[in-house]
Image (cartoon, rainbow over the protein chains, first blue to last red):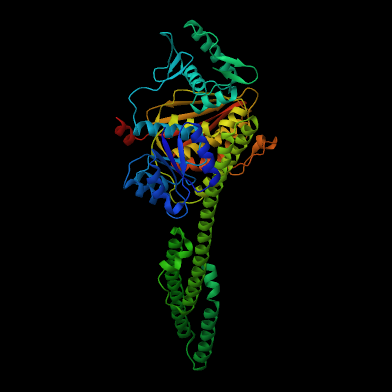
Length: 221
Length: 337
């Protein structure tokens, strides 16, 4: 499990970021004493640091350059100021990404995932399995008993979301939200159409009743 | 300098001369001089007087016209005392002193006002950065606890964010200093992030979004363009009709890339079109109760002017198309090739 260290002085944001990131499969630790930030980072040994710029005591830039003296882990700057100077500074000092508040959580998560993937490449491609079916996002293929079906972009993302939340009920609205976050602007009707097509494809490779409809709630695997 | 007025000002001197002439005439006649002699003396006196007056008039006129010219060419006219030569005449020096005093108090006033404005701008920027912290907190809270209720708050939050951004860019656009940096930007990324900024509002209004192939690289400030697109999207949402549609497309010609944002909303009346970029103009659409501020498009225009983007609006009865035209100069094209 990848470890993320949060340096953020607003406690609500800190707590909510913790919830968000741990909900997405990261181990999270937030700074508790701003005079000990560097020591706490050294003790936690994170894979990635989320760093605010305006902080009590040393500011984000100072902390960033200090981290760079002993480690080259990805650093994501998160700040409410969006001046060019701050962005330039953060890049000059070795920051890997610069995200302005209020950020889109999907974009933040995508950025974190991309940075982690680049910094710690894993040899095998990521895939998900559920009830004998395997989803390969990299090649956008679903496999069952050796039979394969090609998926379109929309279908892949819908299945990706369902696989990630396998066993849970996924409300239609949440699926559409997820698709929008992935730059696929489908509406409720289009979702139904896509799910019908997915079911069709799954039937053809022998997966019947794989995607279930929960009346008035959503879909589930 | 008006000649008539000059002559009028010289009346006392002329009168004194005339009185002198009269006294001299009486004296000369009493001494038994010939009438012709007296006439000759007067003629000479008169010529000298006229020559003196006209020479003084032309010299003064030339000097004053020059001064007027310099003042007119000056951008900051109140700075004229700094440029003009210090006059030699006693009364002129007093006026010069007065001008100096006026200039000084003017400069002091301008200084304080500039300072106040700068401080106010800084305060606004700081305030906006501060208010973004609670906005972020609310956003995270809602996204971590999704429900239809949270979705509505998120949509309202996007409104709040749009208004705060408007205030920020207004404060920035008022200042002449450069707050942007031009770099290679992918139009596609900017459009997607602008749509993401309005995600919940767009979802709430059931907007159908089509993004045509817009993989175009332009040279501009992505943050500013994103703000401009946010304002345009905001308008499309505000003035939508049933089954709203929003379409982004781009065309590329030799020297420019044009990004068009079209909707099928209520459109803009032809009579209002020429004025929509004016500050505070709300037009017919503003009067039908959509609480327009007349700020959004005005700001877009100002920012576009600064960035060198051409901004045009097109509307025929139904639907509006806003086009942003990005210049690609020879240099940029050659570098790309």
